[in-house]
Length: 127
Image 1 (spheres, rainbow, N blue to C red):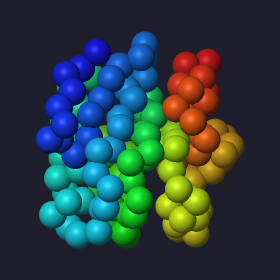
Image 2: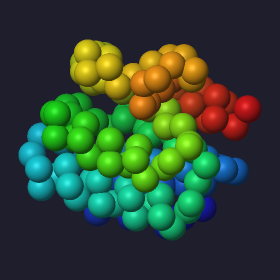
Image 3: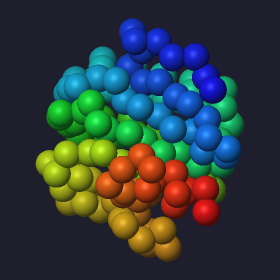
Image 4: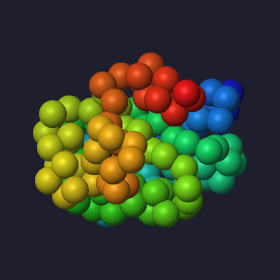
């Protein structure tokens, strides 16, 4: 398990070959917050070297388009692995879908998959 810190924009824990990332910020509106989030997630990915990522959005109330760009940078870093987002609000899920970044089908071409819960995300990625 990786160290956790409340002052970070994201925290991570390793479950087998899956890195579970919990986004700790409520609003991802501006470039400064978005880039800090991207850098923290990339640091976690580089440290854990996971096969797959589950991203927990339970604390995120709003994410703007600049936040999506940061998550796409994470997608590029995790070549060949899957990223499942979970616990996100309906408005955030719709934004991912409208931008064609989200699918519930792992065989689809979208860069991210969706799950309702962290447990579902882990089950999909561990199985």
